[in-house]
Length: 372
Image 1 (spheres, helix red, strand yellow):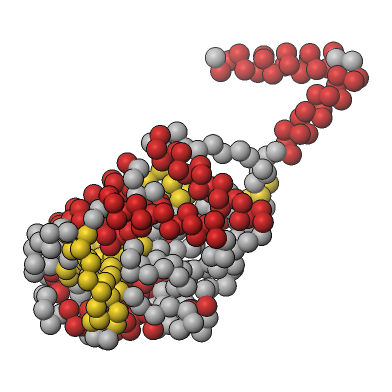
Image 2 (cartoon, helix red, strand yellow):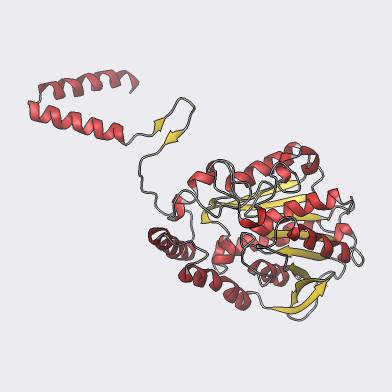
């Protein structure tokens, strides 16, 4: 086959040369058009990609494909109208569907209270019986340090499916400033340590809550608090939930503009400002971005990363995971195909979301209670 290729090329050139002038021009135009659709690579390796059409992943389950397509259209509407997603009522209505559906799929018993002066919601299985009363999970909700609350799908689903006691922290957000949230989490953790051994306490969160989980681990170290038993940095990383290739690729892949004026911490690359909560924060400080310190990262407990291929945090999650592994930390990375940021809270009824819940539960079952 390889010996025939030069002959074929010569034959094509001969045929083009034999065409009338109009046909030659059409062939040349076709060649130019084809070349204009090629990516342009600059000397520093930056690539300009021409418009392309990318279908939904063939690996999505049928239920997920339906819901993902609807969500992409909702986000695209906001982008076309020039409306911020946090201000678009139809986007917020879509986001609100998840927790309502989770309450039906994963019913829980909830008690709203305060721990160390911080408002929390404590979730347990509906019968109030947890599998191990000596273990507890601290949950940190998402919302870009702007919105969101402790009634998160992540708290309810894990409490129900894992039969855990889950303490969801209503930490301070904007207009409060860093390190308000870290202080709130540490206050709750310090109080729980009076009842639970550190190896029996897990901490996890998604999106902003995932980043806050990493920040909290750094904060615990700085303030001589013992290392918890395990951590879950979900849909986030230790540099935020932006950064790397996904910072550029993920948003167009879900129907939005490639940059985000409300980009969260770890805003390297695109250059968007951090959210208001971090307006005065120094991202060279490991308390803000733990990724900058190998010393801090090396002291992380067993850590779970959950992300997806159309999520802005994917590169950061992959990078943080690789850093932890290189430093000898027991870390797991689970990546789902074709799904957007925090999909398991948006579409809790699809198979991929149920798989994610199972992974999270099994991770904490495996690691909590282990001696250090």
